[in-house]
Amino acid sequence: MALDDPRLSDEAGAWCLPARFDSEASADMTGGDAGVLYRLIRPRDPAERRFDRAMITWRCS
Image 1: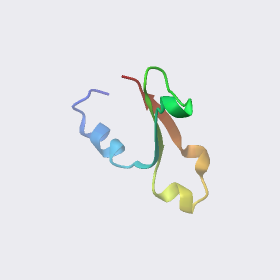
Image 2: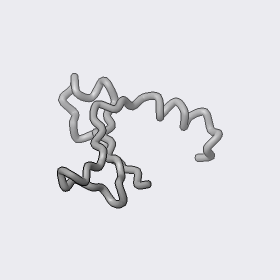
Image 3: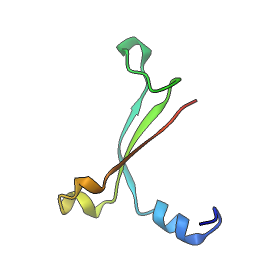
Image 4: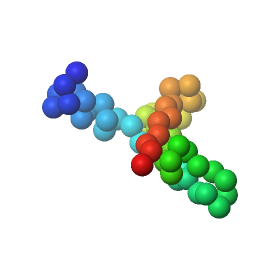
């Protein structure tokens, strides 16, 4: 799928971000080189108790 494909934008808009975890060196919680961990889920999935469909991704600096 190309980056300019409208289906990609539609799919990205179907997810929400209920949790974000930033690296914190003083708490000894780092992801790579000061990364951020993202928890993503579609809004309908928690209501259906489908937590198996959730995703985790991260970004490093």
